[in-house]
Image (cartoon, rainbow, N blue to C red; front, top):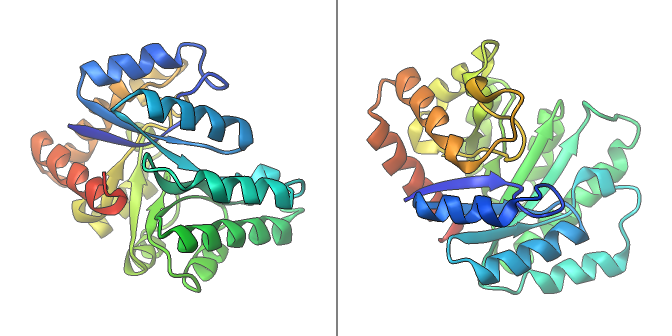
Length: 249
């Protein structure tokens, strides 16, 4: 089994979501679908109840920081009481797209972490151009989880690992300008890495211009094997065990 620890395979993102899920199932790929808003969270609950190879992470993304209501927080709180929901995510900070609402982004992130602590769930964290603030907030919470599609420095990756986090590696490691990611991978080692696709986004180099799917995990596995000089079978074995340990799947 291979575990795609971060993807967005539901109808509001992909019209052929059910076909993609079935194809992954045929190829022994387990999926962790990540929600970002009330609509996607609802879709994930429905899909995870229907397919054995689908688990869910529910959360509210930074894009909702200025508009989320207390009622929606309460709704998410109740939705997390589900055996197929194994994490709170996708949550976090993004200063690349906007720096104007840093305070409200942080406030929402804190609320999501509080829910994770309440439900004793790991978190799946988005952090773009916000590594220090992400770290400062996480170190003040009793949280473990994954740094999704990691783009920070190797030095910061080591610090996140010390907090109990894994580094999520996706298709961007296959890009020609991925030196920073490769350095982080070498610094933390395979014992602290998870693999993901972020489908339908961030396809590997050979699939640029196409919708990404979990079947493209093979390109990430190949790249990690070459970079770390480890056999592909071992990459699959260790990253799968990492995911099982973190998410209890």
